[in-house]
Every structure is written in structure tokens, then in C-alpha cells.
Length: 606
Image (tube, rainbow, N blue to C red; front, side):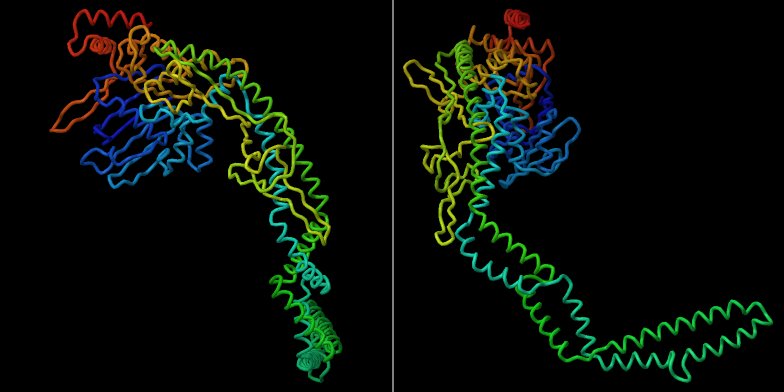
């Protein structure tokens, strides 16, 4: 529900705030007072096109903002766009600068017009004089029909997801296949080269260590033997000195027990010296100053370095590269079997999708017939004489599959052209599957997660004229009445048991009463009232017969202050409301008779 609407420096508005309530909110006022300006401001917050002309003369920028009650769907959209939710409300703000630039904020966080357009179907549907069809494209027409018929697209959506995944897997298998086959010789050479090297992870580091030892064998031998002699072998070695010290401390310990532990520590140190000395001697004796082994290591390191320059920075990366190349070669060898399995998977997914889409299409056609009949009756009760039709166009249900070439359509999944062969290898790749009888220009690009139907509402507003799409209706007032009739038809005639709880929506109708009066106007008021029992409705009207049905009645007025025209909006109490309806009945001069008539109209509307 729309809670609040604000506008600053927008057209003739310097500063205006309207706080709306549930049910039927009606806006009245003299012609040219600016009622439609408020509707246009709300349309702008639903992602409508902005113009610098809306900036009030002399102002730096125009600002429009509104507060809506949040919905689960709207919160999901915010989350997908990285915008934090703000409690149970959604705050939209749009600024249009006099320079022509603009800014969008959602919950006081920077956003884009695209986000507003995503939120619009969850929050409000605006039928302004200048924007009658911006929010009622074919997708919205289909959604309205599904709502009327209590139809769910969940099964079709799941089937579509499986089919699309299968198609993309097949594409990935075949994409660039000729280039892949041209790479086979290179892959074979690379795989053989890496495999022949018989690399072992980390061997280059071990070989570098061994190389350093062999290259410095004499220095290492001299250092090890020098340390051995100093520790153990020479007459002045550490072992000789420790042995003498042990004897002296043991002599002390015979007379003073405090030196017993010290003697043990010295003996332990002597044993450690002996162990280290033995290790040094063994290391020196094990040094093999072999020029042949050094040359062998240098050749192996050179070979490893060549592979690392070509295939990876480390031996592990080279080994991984070889394994990847081997996998690619294996895929080429097993291409036929893998492709056949993917084609079977794609065909099964397509068959399941076709079954689900066909069933949904049949249900839509049945619902379309009922909706068209109800809507035509509702429209004709609003001072119009029309023929109305809900057309559901779908693909033929009895389609087989055949290979096709490249799908040029950007709308469909990536079903590219797959058919080619490589005679020398014996590998032949079939194409992706498409409906039999279709050309490459008529591939399953029309398949979507909501089915394959195109829903179009058609109308003939005068006898003898052919049925035409709604967007060809010239009159905005007629369009608003058609939309009102459609909404009432859906609310009153929808299949109740299958329906999910409808998303709270605010419906806005601008000057829905153009060209009608008398009983037809009263019928419009009754329909608006009926519609407002389930959804919030905002309506701009000039007719007292409609105004009498308001739950909240606002009057829009122009006034002059300091040489400038300003607009204000006021919520009327019961007394002021009766006076406004009386003004609409009698004109500028309100009489006692018009007041009595207004009171009767308001009482009758209840």
C-alpha cells in the first residue's frame, strides 16, 4: 500500500505531501489544478522517463518521494540488488536536476531507474494519461490472465530450467569444436612431452640441493673433517678436554655430593660430541665428487626448466597441465558417446518442458475465454460499446525434433550450430535439438520459464472495426476504464481455490471518467469501490458520482503567493468532503440544493 507521496519543486508544486490510506483514495479539484501531476510523479517513482521540464522554474532540482508498505517480493528484489531493507517500509526517492542529470535512492541508498522498474510490479500499477501502457506490457497481461485462472508457472519453470541446463551443457561440449579438433595434434605433443619427462613433484628442489653439494664437494669434505678433528680426533680436541674435565669433577664428587650431577652433565656433553663427530665423519665419507652425476643433474634440471617455461611455474603446475591436456584428448576420443548422452538428456528435458507448457497453454486458453467474456461485460457497463478478446498464441504442440543450425535469436538459450564432422578421426557431431518443421529463425527461443504463450488483450471500440491490441487505443480515459474493468473482472471472477494470496498492489487511475456521466459514472464508482476492497486504489476524477464513493477524499488546489503559482493537496473531513462533492455537482457556486444532493450521493454510496 502507498503510505505517503511527496513532491518538491516538481512542475507547479513547491512542496506537497499526501498521506494515503487503504481502500479508495480519490483526488478532485478544478481543471488544471495539478491532479494529474501527482499521478505523473508517482509514475516517475515507478521508473517512468524523467524530463528536465518538470523542474520548477528557478529551482536547482525537483524531488519526488514515496513510502510503500513492503512485500516479500519487493524485499527479494532489494536483496538481489544489494539494497538493505528498512523495516516494513520501502522508501523511494528520485531527484531530477536542472542540468538534466538525475539520481535515484531506495531506502536512502543509491540505486538506478532499473531497480525502480523491477519494484514497480510489486508496489503499484499506474494508469496515467501519458503512461497508460508502460506497466501493462505482454508479460503483465499474461500475469493478469494467470491470476484470473489461478494458474501457476512453477512446473513449467522447473522444466524450463532443466531444459536450459541440458542445452547449455550440449553447447559447452560443441562450442568451438573445429578449433578444438585443430588443437588435437598440439595437445598430443604436449601430453607426450610431459609424460615422457616422468616428473615427480618437488624433484627440482631436491636436485638443486644435490647439485650444490656436488659442485662444492671439496669444500664440504674439508669443513666436515676439520670439525671432526676439532671435536674428536686431535690431541687438543673437545672430546679429550671433556674427558679430562669429567675425571676431575668425579674426583670432586667423591668428597662433595654437589658435583655428582655436574659430572653427569659433562659426561652427557661428551657423548653428544661423540655423536656429532660420527655424523660429520660419515657425511664426509659419503661425499662423492662425481662429475658424471653433476652433469646428469644439470641436464635433468635444464629439461625440467624447459617444461616449466612452457607449461607452468612449478613442477606441480606442469604435471597439472599435462593431466588437463590428457583429459581434453580423452574427451575428443569419447566425443560421440558423450554427445549422444547429452542429446538424449536434452531431448528428455525438452519433452518434459513441452508437456508442461502445453498443459499450461490449454489452461490459459480456457481462462482467456472466460476472462474476455467477463471483461467485455464490465467494459460495456462503463459507457463503452466494445468487443474484447484475450488472445493466447502458442507454438504447435505436436512437434518432433531435428538437428538445426545456429540459432540467431538472442532471446533463447545458447543453442548454437553444432553440426560438423572430422573425417580423419571418425568423429561426427549432430546439432542441438529443435522442433521439427522450424527453421533456424524459429527455434525454441520463445520458450521461457513462464511457458511459450504470448498473451495479448485486443479490443474494438467501435462497431465494424477489427480487434486491435490495447496499445492502439488512442484515449487515455478509455484505457483507464478498460484497465478498471479488467481488474474488477479478475478480482470478482478469479478461480479462488488455486490462487495464492495476491501481492498487495496500489492501483492508480487518472481521469477514468472522461466521456461518461450519469448512470455510467455511478457504475464506475461502484467498480472502483468494489476493487478497493482488496487493493488500495488511487483515482483522479471530475465526477461527483465517483467522488461520493471515496474512503479518503483529497482536493488539489492552486493558489498564488508572492507572484508564483503553487499547488497544495488537502485531506477532507466529512463536512469539507460534502462541500467538495456539492461543488462538483453545481459548479463554482455551492447551493443548499447541491449540498443536499451531495449528502444524498455520499449516503447512497455507502
